[in-house]
Image (cartoon, rainbow, N blue to C red; front, side, top):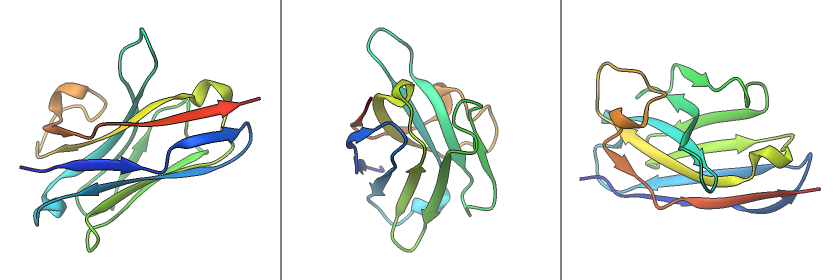
Amino acid sequence: QVQLVESGGGLVQAGGSLRLSCAASGRTFSSYAMGWFRQTPGKEREFVAFITRGGGYTYYADSVKGRFTISRDNNKNTVYLQMNSLKLEDTAVYYCAATGANSGNYAYTTIYDYWGQGTQVTVSS
């Protein structure tokens, strides 16, 4: 069992930056690849970024590529999402998720085993 707790959300002006953190419980954090997703009211949860178990590979949605960076510290059981040059359309609840799967499409919510409760990010003009 893995519990995930996100933090770092808040209100920021367009063009600003935020760093989200996702702290995981348990001693098997490095066994899980991690993803970040986001969701706005009335819409499906949307893939944002993915990082492999060791952190060697990362993948991003086209909408955030070049602006967001996912990273992880397996010694601290934490995954991060650095968000720069934020836009109004980045406003959403952001969720981190953990998957133990060795195959599957990392952009699909269905491969993830555990989810955090979400943290709100609001970008204002």
